Length: 468
Ligand code: P71
Image (tube, rainbow, N blue to C red):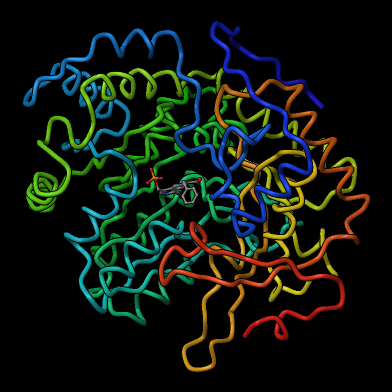
């Protein structure tokens, strides 16, 4: 295992608190066993998300002092616009306060009821924003994505035959755009290859359908292309990104990931009419087009972060640290999704807890146990996040993957803390049979994982007896 040594030293520190297991047990009960409801200062290593949790560099913090808070035409906007154009090379750059607003603006403009939007795998906010328009969000990732043991290098790829089938079934006029999520978050942070990307483009050209990227983790995707795809070893990350985006017509971006900022996002695209309509909507719900729901200083930090994220030493450390955690777990026999993705390690809850049926939320039970025993917070990406109730019967339809995601914030935790996480999970794996399932006692109609509540089942108590 190559040891991923940090390409930075620490200038400012933020203390974190150790809590007792009894305190965490009480907090879990109060939170209805939903980790989104646990106060962050009661978490020791917080791997809930890599979104908005990055440590900014000294240059970014200095950039905040250069904030020009003019309502219109802030100089930070021009710096931001020039930076985005130099990487993505689309004509228009529209700032938003985060990724889901970029999604909302795009989809409320171009997606109409009854339409269909394919993606490799939609993330939850993307799916919810499309369904909110009365349209259908369809996944078309390659089938290897659903096999945690398949070590193919580009498990985020689009299944082109399936995509064509979806387009023909819906009718091309009902597909306003196709998305590619890079890296594919819901499928394990897996990359899309340049080859698959250009073939997706070629297919869509035949139907005249635009291609958009959900570009949150584009730099990590480009790093994997450089590492794994023939012909890219000697190309810079910037060059690879420019080539990747040249196959698309635009992108949505949550800069809370590869923008290395705590808040921010944008839309970038070529189409004039779509841009006009989106801009009008932006003014209605976010703000003037040169700040889009952000402060001038946020735009400056984002412009600097988008450059820093292209640095290869940074990316080698970043992807290396995630892989380090994955390798420690894999070597100890803990079931994880392979190969290890760019931003997170995903525990395979079906294999970790084979005695807990999917109806009893094994991934949620695993996430709860990790917090209770070790103060580590991950996030469920399984039946709670993606399970659907069948209309009529109310039966839960399970997603294929049932996982706990351990998302690693960028430049935040030391390798020693990562080793603590690995050691804890190996310990939990040794006593996995003592874990029990959960029953859901409250769910919201949309994005239910944020607010759902649960109760714990004890051994031998089937969930159906607990539901009133
Ligand atoms: C992540 C998040 C943030 C999140 C969302 C829901 C539950 C927990 C955490 C956000 C994404 C994403 C992709 C591929 C769009 C968004 C929305 N991910 N596309 O992974 O991963 O961006 O949060 O800035 O609105 O933890 P936004």
